[in-house]
Length: 292
Image (cartoon, rainbow, N blue to C red):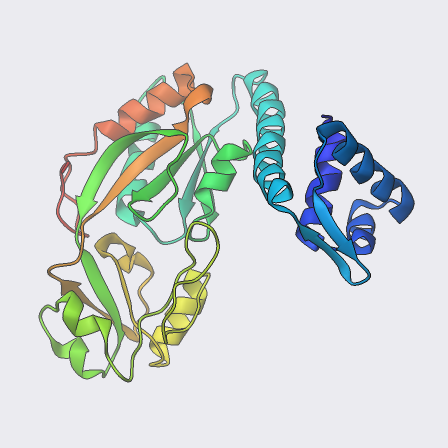
């Protein structure tokens, strides 16, 4: 299969409409339809169920969509990494969620600036759950991620910091006056349902709380008294004056890791990982330090 065919297939699979997919690709619909039929013929399977309203993926098509996305990401990553390897002066790109692990990131950047032989670092800020895709398609070399929340499949990791979690609450709510809380106390607050983040597959868990995708959405909803959330203690770096963070004593611990694609290890990445590993036993203000 050619990458052109895979791009065509992914466009149709995501749009579920040949006309919209053709517009997205900037081509006419007839050659797109022919290309998909040729792909189906070559594979010996039907990828779409077609009708007048559009198209639906078959089971075989769903498998190819997953595999095609991975293949296209790998091709894009190979090109980006090859281009970067030709420039010995380029910085490493480190992806991290905006507002997360702020103090650890500050100390890592300070350590990089002090140490000779460690490549410069460019920080790429992203939203929740976006680091994995940035690593897979080569836009980032490494990422700060959080176990068990982030998708670490296919990456090597170095544990850096273990911490507890806090409940982020609106100022003035009765729970905000507590010294500490338990998961049972924050799980079913009638007037303050827990916000729902998307799962790794993009779907949302069931529940009464609002669906959120960005930290900006969450921050405003908490400030308005519409939701609460249990988050790693170090995420308090982006806490608003309208928020109160209360420790949740029985919440699962969260481990911050530095992650990189297994096939992309290089002397530059190794140097940055060593610098990060030297910080792992440093006491941080956000919570308990050390390795579990």
